[in-house]
Image (cartoon, rainbow, N blue to C red):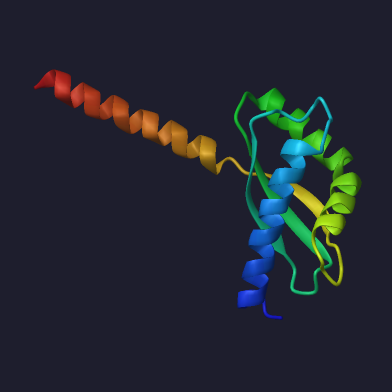
Length: 122
């Protein structure tokens, strides 16, 4: 299976969807922030490893605690993923902090500020 094959894309999206539900419903670690989103999942073609990209809305301390909690809960999350998905191998999970949502929100705020400033100056 090639990295960008249809099957790999489908597995990536299914793992992303299932991990989102697992983090939201099954993980009870108090360090995991309630506004945690799974933005992407990259599963290797041999299904041995998966990078799970998560975004956390909150301050830097909340982000670090969430990633720490997710890393501690990785084996349980992997077990849950194995029970939900029928894969030849259940990948080892690595959680990576993704700041793209927060970056987008900040850029949107800056654009709105500039637009409002232009409207007021006219």
